[in-house]
Amino acid sequence: MANIELKAVRKSYGAVEVIKGIDLDIKKGEFMVFVGPSGCGKSTLLRLISGLEQITSGDMMFDGERVNNVIPSKRGIAMVFQSYALYPHMTVFDNMAFGMQLAKATKAEQDERVRKAADLLQIDHLLDRLPKQLSGGQRQRVAIGRAIVRDPRVFLFDEPLSNLDAALRVQTRLEIAKLHHDMQDVTMVYVTHDQVEAMTLADRICVLRDGMVEQVGTPAELYDSPNSTFVAGFIGSPKMNFMTGAFADAFDCTTLGIRSEHIEVVEDGSGIWTGKVIHTEDLGSDHFLFIEIGSDEPIIVRQSGKWFGKLGAEVSLKPVDGNVHRFGQDDKPLG
Image 1 (cartoon, rainbow, N blue to C red):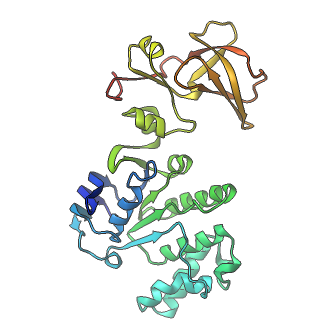
Image 2: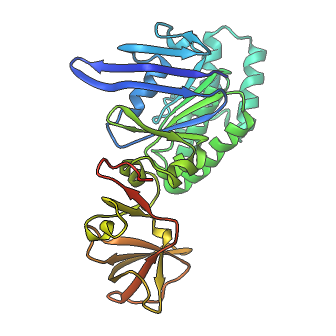
Image 3: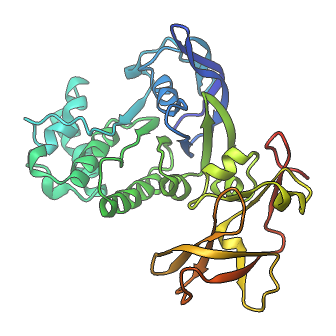
C-alpha cells in the first residue's frame, strides 16, 4: 500500500488551469473518493496520480518519494477505466494475465494469480470466454481482476460503474466494497459523480470544485457538517433545501439549509411554515413531498413509508430541533 501526498499540485493545458493548487493526503489503505460536478478536475487529478498526465507544478509523493517523473508502470498503480478496455480477441484468462505476460511472469504464477483473482470476483467460470460473450457487469469484473493480478500498491478507479444499468451498479458496487475489505493493504482512489457510490464506498470523500478542494472528510462529516453551501447542496440526495430572505432572517443567517428528513409535517397546524403539496414521489419505503412555501424553490420533505394526502393539500411544517444549517454571506457555516 502507499501513502499518497499531493503538495500544491497544479495542472494547466496551455493557458487553461484545470487543477489549481491542491494539497491532499491519502492515507495508506484507505478508500478515497473524488466527487464534484462535471469539469471540476476529478478525472484529471486521478490521471496525475497515475502518471498518465504530467504535473505542471507541485509535488506528488508516494510513501515520501517524489514520483513526478516516474512513469506509470513504475508507480505500482493499477487503473480500472469506465470503458473496461478489454482485448476483444483474448479470453478472460488472457486479458487478466496479459500484464503479467509482459512482465515475464512464469505460467504457473500467471495461473495462480489469475485464478485467485477470478475466485475473489466470482468469475472463475468465465475464464475461457471472450469479452463479447459477457454482460457489462462481468466485463467490469474482468477489468478489476486484471488490475488485481498486478498486485498494485494503489488502485485507481475512473467512474467504473457509469456504463452499467441500475441493478448491475448496485451489485458491482457491493463487489468493490468487498474487494476493499479483502485487500486492506491497497490504497484505493475512486472517481465518481454518483452520490450513492461516494457515500457507501468511501472511507473519506474529497469534494472538488473548479480545480480546488472544497472539503475532505468522512461521508458522515460531509453530510452532517458541510463547510459551505456548495458541499451542503452537493452531498446528499435529494440535495439540502435552501431558503433565503425572511425564512433565513428568522434564523439570523443569510441562507438557511435543512435536509428533507429533518422537516416534519405537523397535523395540528403548529408548524412555522405552511405550504401546498405540488408534487409527490413514491419510492416505496419513502415518500418525497415537494411543497411550495414561498421560498426560492419548492422544498422537499421526506416522509417515511406511505403518505395518504392529496396533491394541492395545505400542510404545516416545522424543522426538527438541532438540525438546521445556518450559512452567512460567504456561504460558510455560522457558529
